[in-house]
Image 1 (cartoon, rainbow, N blue to C red):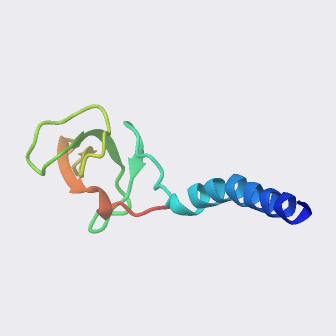
Image 2: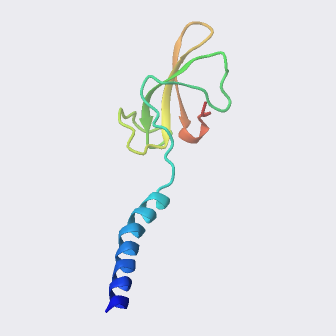
Image 3: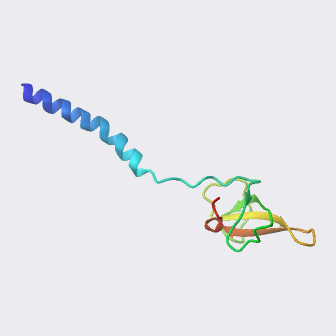
Length: 98
């Protein structure tokens, strides 16, 4: 009887500990969320310029969305040397994390 009690306690501990251990180790770290209005730098940009996120796109030429929802592309605005506002699109993996 004592052996069954010990085996039951060990089994209970394993059952209680294992799910939380699996959940903690199964979740990959998530990249920080890029938000509207955030200043970014990306590969190929001019470091002295400021680029601001104004929306998100599923495809390079797709419509601009206001919600992230796992979009692949970022739409941004910048000011040219002539003082004109321009909009561009980059892939989210091009953003340099600071």
